[in-house]
Image (tube, rainbow, N blue to C red):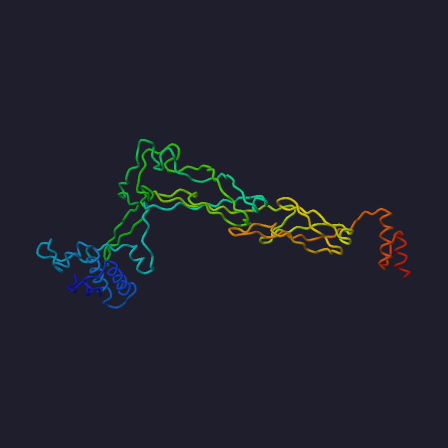
Length: 374
């Protein structure tokens, strides 16, 4: 055992906090650990640092040290504190934490939040635009109602695991030249739960949870778009050991519409009109998502011309107002004409100065002209 002052060994003041003592120890242990430092005196300094930390980390031992120094008043003949080589519990978790910065193992019996769930919901195009309230059935894990989540048969209770005393961890101790190494593993008897169920619940088989479909009422907001998510707090998987439940995330898929398409907050559609309507102009009725509206087609309108209905688009999600409906015109060329219609078009062509060459000859006449150049 070293006779140096333990506070001096760790380089801290006598009123240092437990956290300051721990940080000082970690720093010096890294510096002098024999696997890292190959100096001849590294091993001795490492033992000295560990011995000081073993005393100062324990409130009772530290109080006795502050009062009596190296002399242990409870030991016969004034024997000192037990040194690092004899009684320090230097766990594998401490070594891993020292060199890799890892944290402590989580207590398996501590409350843990339940897992989040994702549900993919297909909605009609119109419902995504205007919003809708609806019920959905979610398959999820729920706390068993028969045993109230204990996993034990009603009238019985889970027992504390005798192997780990309810900690969920089993310890193995190994004495080495550098001290006593304590290795902690999940208890094999209870699987880390810290409890043993002698008589299991018949509904859940001892797990404390069952699979069910739960009906949930949701509100789809107006203007929601493809791929957006709705969050329903507390409707995910139940928590563990009394922890809070997770959340439900509903991912929206919008079904395509046969007439409308969406571009941002605008709705777009294509309106076929005749050659006569395009040439002379007309007033036509166009469908909207909530009814019908009239628009004027000016004379001389060309294919691809666009008209706009203000405020007939998609409501802005979580905002004010809504987009427009944009109507793109497509002039349709007739494919089946009567002879009277053809005569009228020929007259129109002559009046317009257009030369129209109609090829009504047979296939062989066309081939003949191609070779003779007529």
